[in-house]
Image (cartoon, one colour):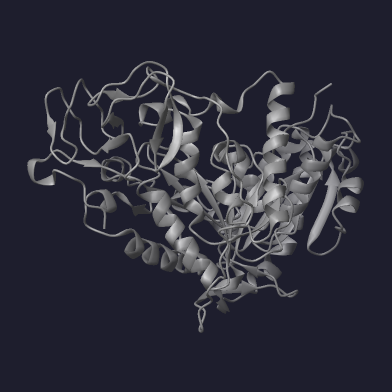
Length: 516
């Protein structure tokens, strides 16, 4: 259990590591307040979640949090001062990757936990049971959504009244599919993403709808992804079907034909090894790396011990802390694969006149995060302490079991889309500033980093990890509770985002292709 210092006098700060140059304020600190545990008086106003210096730091010297470098003093910092973007900046430093030196054997439990899953005919296990509509191009988005809207329970409750085992009909549309290099990496990535969703076990069946003249031709899409038009997957275009009205009618009729088979499922006990959990954080704050992310990491360690898989992602948000993962790589080759993705990002940003250190976002900074190094160190905590067993490119199918990494951008909808395409059947999302997010066809479960957020936005949150900061619960206790919630959600319990109907608008494939 965290023991914030000075709790008796209502002055609460947290020291994370003996070598740190800063402590984290749990309450707003004002000038003259004595932090007795540090022997330092506050010099200035320090908001909750932000950093206060506990010792003098010379200009240009490194500043440490978590026992790791989070940046360099852009001006001299005195004890008691607020440490943030006005006096802390990015800088280059050498990182020892020490590939695999800290990898340890994984301890598996003798009797793995189970959840109530849906076993498909081919043995794949689903946590939800949707009918999906995918589009090859943006031009067919309106048609796809019109078909899905016909089956919305909040608008046409009678449409699915006889099919209670079907979670819904969802249209996942996107803004690309044409005016791109037909032989390029961008189209291949889009097709891989669509293929991953088309194969996802949470879809009982689906439609693929195109316009007809787009670069992303449906026959090529199906061929490259090993898909075939049949009972489970029906593909057609607006141009061949005869226009918008006929295409909508055709799509509605096909889904009506699919519904009886989709409804003929039942849940049964399956081992937790069938869980693939995508790990996300968004709207992070200074507490993310102290409460919610470590709690999620504790749950991930339990998941791995029970044979399951967790997908850590958001490559720009591990930048500067990737050495903590390479040290846990199961083999040196796995560690080098991760570093190769970091080098790709450095080159990608250089080609496009960007920088990997343009993080954190405005909201992150308002919450107390100053540099991408600080954000990355807290973000990696989501992955727990298990070995890193493999590294995947965006939307590649995840085959390994254990903790894996998938290369994605940091923007949550794009990152989670890649994870679901890779097979994630549950998303767990930590947030400190607040998030309204869902991810059909996989349920999304959200963790609040602090109690103030929980009380303000509990309508969107599923668990309050602020109890760690308040001293009421320990990280292992909440981690065990979260692991059980994984099993409950996978068994059909609805998350807050599902109750609100989130998920259709958050399908955002990564666009890296030049548009011409």
